[in-house]
Length: 455
Image (cartoon, rainbow, N blue to C red; front, top):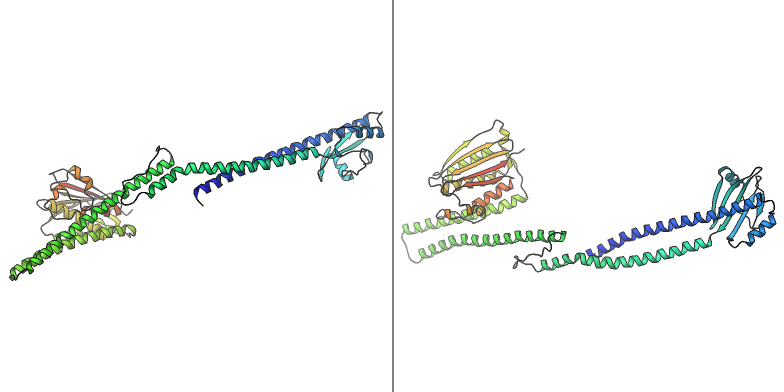
């Protein structure tokens, strides 16, 4: 069931409930009003008959019966009966037996003053009439044919009006729902026209104030992210292809040149050494790509364990010194009194990759291959800094340094692929931390990393 039909049915259902309740109320109060009015007429007839029969001496039973029969306002099946204190009939204007003649009922009238009975559309009002010598009970009964016909007519009018109202409501609800959903239909058509080849197309946000406009705005923001993701993916594929193609081309060229003619052992050795360096470069690049893919996989199913951050840094320094003995790293930790503040939740392998990349970048870009590390901690987490004396990062490039394969002007001549900082940024974010750069051109760079502790 589409939204337009659902909205129409819901709207019609709500209106139907309201109309039914209002019609029931109208019919109920009309019925109560009819009953009250008719019972008042019966009560007046009973009291009038009692006054004439009991208080007027010149009125006999026969004369009163003649007067009753000559009345123009005689009701259908009208029966007025007067009972004395012994429940004996003193007068009746109808030979038909009155269903209010039960002695128990008459005695109840004398105790309460008035009673009302309804039987098969015949309504009876019994009232108590006192004089100096007797307690009379007068019953007046009849069928309110006129009032009941009016109620029946009212029921027909209410039923017909309900059907007419529901037809109008359903038609108007269908039209209204169509108009209300028209912007959504327009949005659906616009979305269907968007593909990978025209991700720059955006939805019309209208007046920008209602919910549909906000939905279009939200969708446009999502398209911005998708377009940026596609652009980065294309850039990533192009850069990755370039980084892979270059060493493969160099390797192929060197091998082809070496096979053109016979060469000396020394020449073959030099060729193999050059090929080995290109293979190692390709291997490092492949490892970085695998690290990127691994981070994305760990982000979906990460299982972190408590790790002492200072011990992790010492382990990273061992790896740096083993692989790059020419690097000089000075580590100045400021350990807190509470050692639990040094414990963070995370993946030791991923954090090692991040820290090693930070330290390696600092040493690689420093002319003397020296960096200074510091570590402090408080109740919030650990604060790690790495300071080098390299060329610094220009202000216009700082927003791009976390993009894969991006390399700034100051990196010219320095080996690398532009993946390291992207790895670091993803790993730190995965662990709920933050990374900041403080740098000025030709004045070095300070990398600040905050990692929340295990608490």
